[in-house]
Length: 617
DNA sequence: GCGATCAGCT
DNA sequence: CACAGCTGATCGC
Image (cartoon, rainbow, N blue to C red; front, side):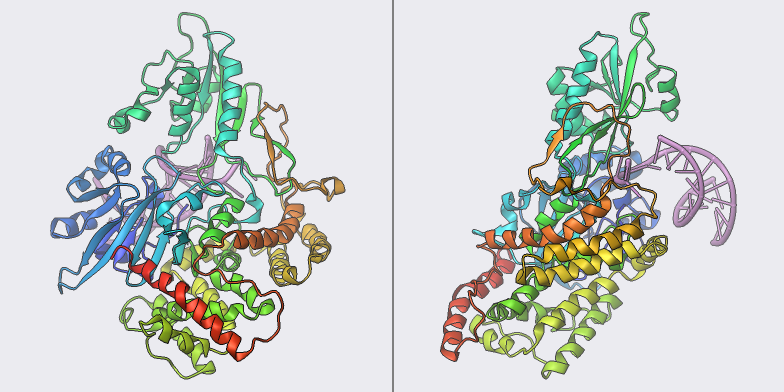
């Protein structure tokens, strides 16, 4: 569940997915998708009144989200204030302060998020840099590279901040079978059942939320049928969904619901009340889509689990897994990452620390330590970014969070060198200026940490409260986290750091054993990690609590492999704005070499960074 | 009577 | 197995 407070520090005059409290003063609203936890305050009378007195404030979302939203009478009053935007079409939006007339332009691009119908990410491009608000999303590995608007030419755009759907950003959720695997498993189960007779029917026990539609359309297509649902109203303008759903109960696949549907099912009734089509009793199985996750080294897993005589759970996820998120972040390498969800049993601090490893600063930290030339490049790219975060008074008088960060930054910089003025516009000029930052890495690292920790003023309370519950069992996470941090550095030096981590893992494991789960043993049988997982599509009769077994082993293993993976990814990302030439040996460069390097870097990299942020302005 | 919040339950 | 959201109780305005 999202606990994002609604405002991005870079663009605090707009609100995203939150419509209460300070968001009531926003100059523009954005709704990423039509789930209630992203719509807080959206039907509030205060906001409704504000709209009636405003000429400028609008709600921006996708066409599909607009349709879904307006299909609910409680939100019908938004009709005249909604501006639906096409996907992948950069659109300039003027943010006007209606009192002062002050204006700021922002370019927004909607990117399909794969979470539910109409769900999008928002890419904001403006004077404060490129910011990606992911909303909720499910991306497969590699998906980010296929999104045109995350690129500028052949390069990845310079993303300042990602506001991230971190629902499964926790190594517990290392992998979740792909959509295709899940669909295939469900199709096989359903096919085997409904082919037996017309009285063999399936009840898809779906929650009351958008997001299962692609299941319906795929099943409808596969079995040349329609799925029974309670209402078609919300899909009336979406033919590609509408054609696969029906309110006619005489179909073999149902996704209808009833407050007492579980009882109904026990009594061999469908939620719609059906017990028979023509006097012949139905043979009903229930399939409950639910998230299943697996460890990094899980060799074979089932996407269907039998939970009773005629009950099944089927793997289904609205959100990206840990490894999918990592792939996404490794590709984008944003400067900052802020989680919008704290996974159950975690705290904001823990998640922020783990996310720091995926920040651009952090991956460069490794390069800085072992590849000294890298720091020049890193500083070059980062200097301006850095400064732009603290240069002017845009945040003056606004919320505490950005100001606090700014102050922290300045004080950090002061210790190294006198306060700097705003960065020069010229690329060449900015170069020597930023290179003089003698020890920038630690500062930047701290900066990332602090900003994450201190972000989200009132939001933090919620998150910390969430976290309180698990302060009783912190060792497992802490142990794990420490190990990972260590590995981060060690891995670059020594490929045998694996043994170091393996040694550390039993300790964290034993503390974890106090949890309710019964992880599998540290068996050595899985010495050979298969990166190509084969999720079984075949129905399993197993009723074991399979999905979280091996947690401890996975945690430890994750530490080792993810760093390797990260390195590979950065190597493959040769076109990135912030990639750097490899330094084969760590000798100290001579001044003339440095000068050559400066020229090379200045000729391309920085120019691209600057252009990237102005591309659509 | 309405909204916000929380516990409980899927 | 934890998606998202409903229902009902309680409290405050």
